[in-house]
Length: 374
Image (tube, rainbow, N blue to C red; front, side, top):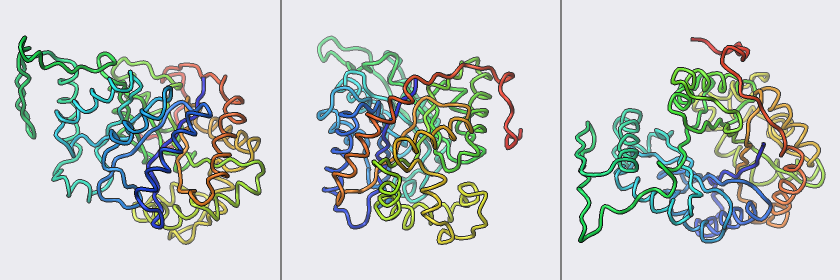
């Protein structure tokens, strides 16, 4: 069964006041719940003005008080940028407060400046140890003493007077964990499969989605886990309007286009991702990539009919996935049109894709994508 979710990075335009941007994000989450979207993911960054959420847990706690059904997910926490014992307790608290609506994305962090401000000297190794610590806090009863490379802690025995340690995850043994992959040769997704975590792919280019799933399955089968396409999330750029012309105008000349011109494309250029995004175009710089081309050929932009047809291309290229996750953008100056986008997503697009089902195949049954190399 296929769903539509929301990703609040957020892409915060320079002209948007941070407080007004927070209120806008809460409004988008309320619209997502109103129109039947299944989940909302909130990112974590400490040094990015375009992506200004230092604590996704605080965002989700605020959202939890304004919603009742939609699942709430950190996307992702960077455990190594925190005391992992403290982060594990905050997430247990949030899991309880939301009645088990929480999912927890984990990652090493994409930005060196975030690592620097938190003193994160070894992102990948510290992440692995931090996640082990979080799981120990969630799953093990005291007394427990841990001495690691980067952190040490003790869980005391239960005290009948203080009645603690008392906090446990609402979901057992802990909230579902997720990991996201971006690069075509994503080792993160192989690790996600090995650990049995929810996989998410950032759809920079549909051409390599099949390779993402193949790598996830490689990891899953190496650990005797079952890889279920219905658990696979694909983060995408989506904008729906009543007509193709209106949707294109809103995407190209509005906040989505601005975010790509000023932030995303320069970042992809710096990271060497432009050839991945548009392999069919001979581009050298971000300015060489036409926003109109992205909106027409790469993004899910258009009327409901057009968006469903474009989504089918991604499904065919990838082999199928369970949830498409739409990013939000700062359409504060066109709020009514953006609300209509959510309405059409929930009332027109979602019913047409809701009953899609994907079989669970083995790695041997899956055709090996040409870009996958051992």
